[in-house]
Image (cartoon, rainbow, N blue to C red; front, top):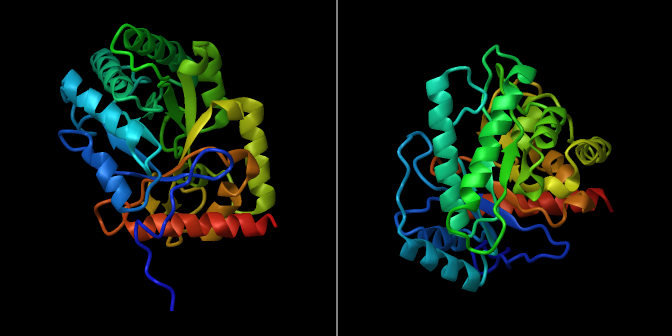
Length: 311
């Protein structure tokens, strides 16, 4: 009988053709706890919130705390990269001027912390236009992104790039980024080069009605990404199964192999050779408190299944 997985039996993945499996974890007041929690579940990459995801007030981190995290990350034997996720309240597409102003300020604050701790990217939900229409909201979205990047450039610089990563949406209501064409339009209009990229969420992709659960479908999706936003702009994947059916247009994550996509479906995409160097970060519920050791193991199993499908 095989030995149960532990963080010691799950070897770290590195750059150069081996997919690194990561997980969203709690940061804590000193931030360094995120690395410890990631290591405990066998994650190669961690993602954290820089403040409460459902509150406007930013967490204030001293330069000493940020420096300590940078040092700990650079020396960590397993965790090779950190990503941050922006606050859920941000809505750059809103027609409410007060909400837009708060969103712009919050994005700038989130990016400043992410840059200060040496993150590899700040994942952002663009928001919902709530009837204004995509074309109507793009100018203010672009202006907000440009302002955030400029503010970040004037702040603390750890010497490594930290792009804002626009995440594809599940398609509910007037959400912006429900297709790669919309994301490509924002990237093109913003014209910020490497300061902007994308994050691909598998559950959102499935819920928005884009199939990828076979090798042929996954190949078509990857080709479409390359033709629109460009694979060079894809910095990370949010690896999530789905509680809801294909095309349901709802953002509902499930543990790997327990949802409507399944391990083989996720593996078909994850095993694509063009995605080999793109970190795949779990945002699954676990037992209610986020990804666990067994969830990381399930993600690696899905990858193995996907690689086997491709021979």
